Figure 1 (tube, rainbow, N blue to C red):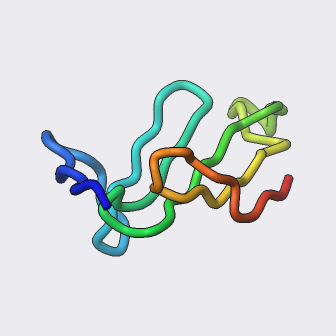
Figure 2: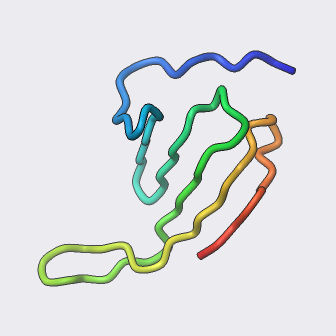
Length: 74
């Protein structure tokens, strides 16, 4: 099994794990563990003056190098 390197730099942490967002993709989890959470904002809607996620793809992925989908929902 290959050794996974720790994340470098500063990240927002939630319950001891990194939470990273870039545009409409959010990744939560430590790549040294077996799985991580992948969220993709598919659509948004306006609530008042705020743009709010409406439909989100949620996947639990493995960190085995193949990024195998363990579970998926919307």
